[in-house]
Image 1 (cartoon, rainbow, N blue to C red):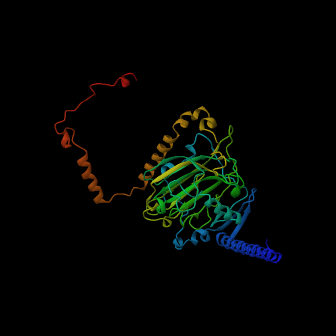
Image 2 (cartoon, rainbow, N blue to C red):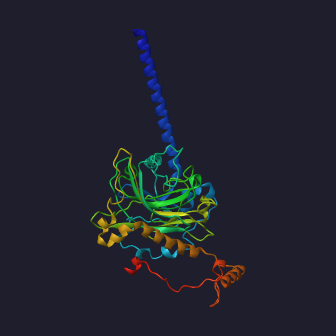
Image 3 (cartoon, rainbow, N blue to C red):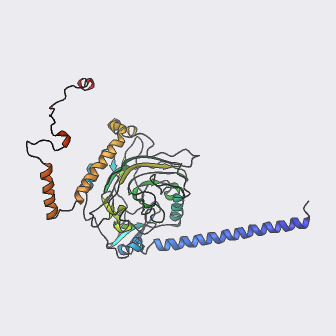
Amino acid sequence: MISPKKLILLTFSALGLIIVAKSDRTLSLEKDEKELVRSLTSINKLAIKSFQTEHGDILDCIDINKQLAFDHPLLKNHTIQLMPTTIPKWNINNNKNSKNGDSVPFRQDDISCPSATVVVKRITQEDLIQSQRLKSMGSKYSRHISSEGKNIELSGFHFAVGEFKYDNYGGKANLSIWEPEVSPTQISSASMLVATGNYEHFQSIRAGWIVYQWLNKNHSRLFTYWTADGFIKTGCFNTLCPGFVQVSTKIPLGYLFNQVSTYGGKQYEIKISIFQQDSKTGDWWLVVFDENVGYWPKSLFTEDGLVHGASLISYGGEVYSPVKEKSPHMGSGHFPIEVFGESMSSFNNFVLLVLLTFTLILVIESAEERRAIPSEEEKKELERLLKVINKPAIKTFDHRLLKNHSVQLKPKNLPEWIISN
């Protein structure tokens, strides 16, 4: 049995440990808070003019040359591009492409930034805290990246996407905007992605809308995420780190959508394009609502990465929920035919095929526009090749196994399934 003296000693020891632990925790919290303040001071540049929206966001107009992007060591001597030097054919007349919903008109009442400034959403402590939570939940990771060794649990993620795994220079997507109900630990989003590489060489740019309760109070917002090393050291959400060069005076990253789709009611969508302009400049542009929002400079990426285009492009939805919770809706939570009616029945059955075919068209057109004008020597070589390929009207076959081949003008027998059709 413990003596009274020992009991008193143990009690005081326990109290001492509690006080020390509490003191250490207080110091840790104070240190974290100071780090947050330091980060905010670095991220939020001096505002020339500011506005507060009805949802409580503060939008700052900052000097275009003093934005956060240029804190990046690779962009110290960067020359700002105010608009793309070339625009792909498929990115012109965006308004003619959609049949399923109305494009959301950009609306920020009484907000107008002065000349030589750009608009950015002011970052708060809550933004920084919640972005770290998003990372810990694995929301920055792609299905194409291994999560081994990163302490990331991806079992709660669900995806529904159309992919095109060939060389491309970007594309565009019309994404219906929704505000599905999510719990504090859940995410629902829709986006498009351009990417190349694997593992630590994975480089990607993603843009779309996201609903995450702690980050945006259950509202749907415009978001982006990029990485140049498989999410190891580079990249972030929106403008939480240097890299993305903002040029728009109207649309900031993190923009809250005023109008969203309703099931059985009116549909609204966001039109997003991500494309790499001419091979000389090589910057990756983001266009939203036909507005040049900004770009990721080529210098952020590597020669074996997005400097020379992408090898994957995808469009679709993503949700996350802890495994013990029921997943939130992905978009409307209904099949397209239920939302858009009978006119969408064929799309419902062939959604993947349509997405891939659409992307293929975009990639071909984009590649054609980027093709350099051939030199005189290249022209001569092309003429030589054409002479080899284009034969005279009467000539034998070139393949050695077909030298004495007799041409068949039609099949001798037709299968019954062709005749019956």
